[in-house]
Structures are given as structure tokens and as C-alpha cells.
Amino acid sequence: MEEQTRTATSSSVAPRPTMRTAGGGGNFVRMLISVVVLIIVLGGGFFLFRNFRSGVVDTGKYQAVFLSNGQVYFGKLKGLNTAYPTLSDIYYLIIRRPLQSQELEATEAAVPQTPQYTLIKLGRELHGPVDKMVINRNHVLFVEDLKEDGRVTQAIRQSQQQGETEQPAPIEQPIEGE
Image (cartoon, rainbow, N blue to C red):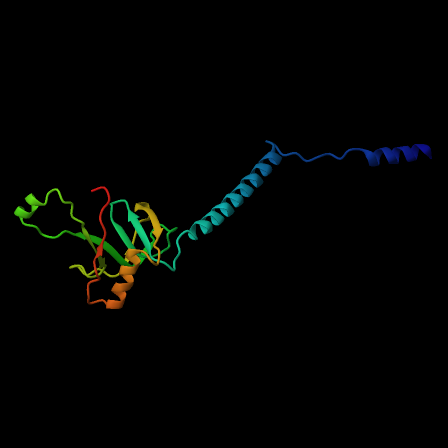
């Protein structure tokens, strides 16, 4: 009886054969799982970063959008994190210099003149553009929210009160460094 017990015990304790695939299949599965986890982590990080960046622009305010061609537009910006953000309720500045005769220029050459800025509502130009601009994101250098008490925002509010038919009041401000 002892022999039967030993035989039964030794056969039940014997190691089971393991299944192995050719070429290290276990390593491939681990690597595949690691890559999937990495993609999920990076995707989640991108999603969180994108949502964090979208809070940079206050959509309740006007923004100054500085473009790579040197132009600056003021308006309401949407979709900054897209390939083609849109700007609406658009304004821009032009510099108006008073016309002078050559005599005045010669006598007043030493006296610097203060340039006069005029805020223009987009859509009043000769070609009559619609008050919406689609901008290639690659050409946006930076964006700034405008303060409610800033000169540009005040001029925009004044323009809106005057109505679309009248030109807004000019903004007078010296250019520093000239």
C-alpha cells in the first residue's frame, strides 16, 4: 500500500509541461500591452493639455491676434486650438498722419508729431468682406485678452454705440521709440 501511495503522490506533484510559442510570444504580448498603455497615457495627457490650454483665451473678452505678417486684429476668437481658428466682430488699427506742406515739414522737422490711430471695423473696406475671418493657426504668433478699460476695447464699445454707419473715434497714442 505504501508503494501505491508514493506513486500516487509523486505523480500528482510532477511539474506540468508549459506551452511555449516559438520566437518568445510572451515578450511580444508584453510589448504590445506596453505600447497600448503608452498610447493611452499620451492620448490622455494630450487631451488634458489641450483642455488646459483652451482656458488661456477668455471667450467673454476681446482678443488681440498678432499674425506673422505683422498685422494685428481685434475681435472675438474661437477655436484657438484648431488648425483654423475664427475671429469675429473684427477691428484693426490704421495710422493717420496729418497732411503737411513741404514748408511746414522743413520748419517743424525737429518737433515729433503724435500719430493718430483710427480703429476700423472690418467690412467697411471697398471689397466689403464679411465680419468673420478664418485664420491659419500656423500664422498666429500670439493672442492677448484685452482689458475692459483698455483704449481699444473702449473704442470698440464706442463704435458699437455709434452704430455701423459712423466711423469710430480715433485713438490717439504716441508711438514709443520714434
